[in-house]
Image 1 (spheres, rainbow, N blue to C red):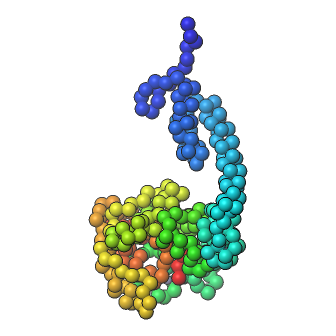
Image 2: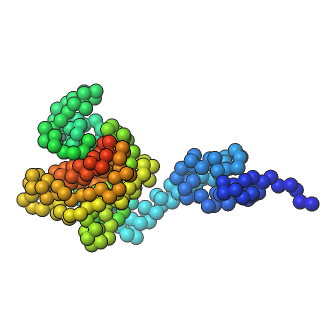
Length: 307
Ligand SMILES: [Zn+2]
Ligand SMILES: [Zn+2]
């Protein structure tokens, strides 16, 4: 007679042998577990299985870290990526299209700068940390958003990364983490859902993707905030960087560009609008206006860079 095996009930209700079930679970969940093992603790049948997994997970992370370095080195040999800013070689694929040196020289916001609390424009004034909420640039009173922030200025590595994102639907890890850092600071950390600034559907079909959606999904993955890509649509396409367009003309052209299709999903929410660049603020302000009309409690804006 075979030894009595311990059995347990899975989340779906079926009974399984303890060990067999855990082994299945490990195989089935390996990619997710390696990202965030703590989330899955309750799905293991007992503490021993859990500890055994943690050891496997640790080894996998170590192997994956070594493999990443080896992969970067091999990639640089086989397919050398030239820095889009300075022309030197890019040694880590996490840096995207710019080299580590250009990233070090990039004008990124660290959180120590004094900014207009509303639109995020850099201020030359030095203001103590506890009075920063009172800083205003004087040019953004009529903007409809609650507060806007960016990863840095639209120059060098950030500019090159944004131009690349218009060509390829891929966010370099460096860019994603830069935006995630900003999202964790006041006041953007109050947001409870993410909405990418929509493209007009003709424009999206032409390009094949909306770069704001690609950024939004990446930020959602890091922050675990939900993304809503369907409640707001863009009815009118307006050219963003048309030469000779001043802020006022830009505002008029974009004024009725957006509409909310599902106000119920927006009502009472603190929305985080995502876009690649903040130029005059007219686009995100027009988008924020319809979100507020739909009942949004606040509209925060996060862009990779600002002009
Ligand atoms: Zn470079
Ligand atoms: Zn301002």
